[in-house]
Image 1 (spheres, rainbow, N blue to C red):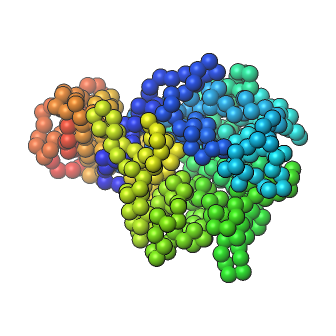
Image 2: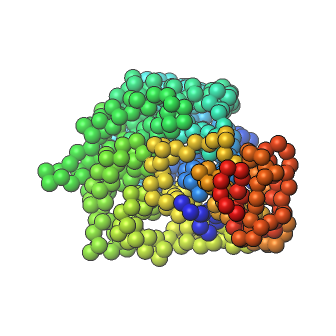
Image 3: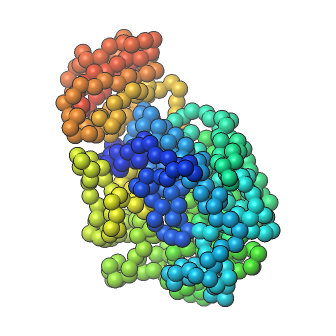
Length: 508
């Protein structure tokens, strides 16, 4: 990707606000209301979902700025800090045993419950810590169930390692569990536990007691995929066997090859697979695509095409406005079309999104960006924005490359440090090591700071005194050597093209 566009920069600015503004996620406090615990009830209406969804844009944005990582690392650290808190596992810590309101659900929740079980069976979202046969398990990571907690935590930790380039898989993590008990884990141990569960449970680990969700299980697999890509391990090895299980047991086609069933979830205790009826069956597919595509491109493309055909979203003769598209799933469809360069479908969906989903810049200086989706809310919904913003933040194939062709941090390449973000923003920061040139594009991330003086450090420069710096095509003397391999560049906040040539090549 050449550079981050204004929308990506605006979304990054809002992510920074959310991550760095203090709030209290302990049992004595409550998350700031801009954390999305409102979308997709009853199953996703917990603020933890906003944490891991928000992280996905970070490695995608890194493709445009691989020589600038500090802002992504800070955001990831703040997400992880909240994730391991009481509110990160609030459902596991408070929704204990059978649901006392099992016979009083609103009508719109009943579609998520098999009809013969309604009135005596909990909906998605009721985690049921303490339900037999596993009993009460205070540790949200080490439990038999709750794979949607540790699976997404493992993915979030992998993203942090990816964007930072720092090894931290053996560092202790203190996880808050039931009755505020603390449990110590590491990234490595979490990944090893998830892999072991895949090996012993061909059906897949379960989320709520006792539901197995392809959505959550595929996300747990993606965390293993990233861990292997970063550390050259083989923990992801059992995942393809689970995909085979999905093909044979969790989905079916009609005689004409149309999608007939796709498991929303499977309950091994009830021995019941729950799938949505009619064309709605496709809504079981869309939540999985983001996670399945980097792990099994062929299977994900096949199920994507089945779902699009079942809903009619790939039929240009059927206006999307008449199909009442779910914003969560249409956002995923647009991202998928962008990712695989299905340009006709992306353009068709994007026309609808631009017209109906209320894209706008906001904030005191109009420097944040998000979609409002027609929700009457003070803050944009994080969960649905996070997926849609992937298409704004990266070039086609960016998500697949993170897990299969990762851009690993290099200890030998120059890197920006000490950038006055969010006063100044970085659209582009990339090394051309063949020509020994670092190119940087800056902007005023906070418009009111435009023209103010700023500076930043560039580390890992061989013979920094012999470097040359140009700003907007003109030789610059506004820099100085600060230590053995670093220089400090001085400029004003604004739109600038900076080129740093260092010994070994690249004409001035």
